[in-house]
Image (tube, rainbow, N blue to C red; front, side, top):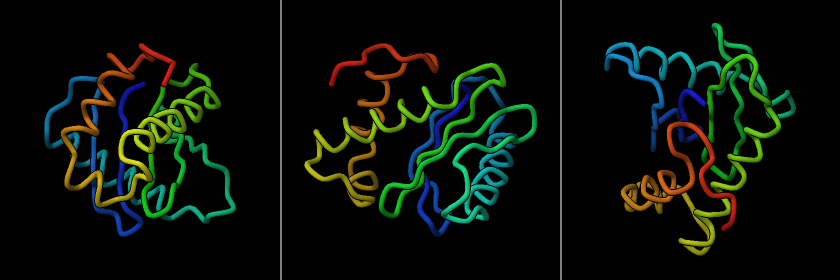
Length: 127
């Protein structure tokens, strides 16, 4: 996994985790392009996108989009399962997670993500 983004349906970035080293200017450009591309997709369309030389996997939960960019040879369904597991972990911690939980408790959301993923790889599968 190269990156994980959480953003609202208005396009406001709520959480970002990068697993590849990039300059801030390049991160902002990639984030802007990726958010626009995902938001342009209709709800009934596939959650997998080919973007640049990466594959993008995203899922919408309530008002938040969870988006991951993965390498071309990585499995999209496993990435979708990783997204779902992260949402389950957030639900278990916050009760019923919502956008405001992420906004006001972003440190805890990052901590949970870091416990779950390390270097873009799943470290712990159990909840």
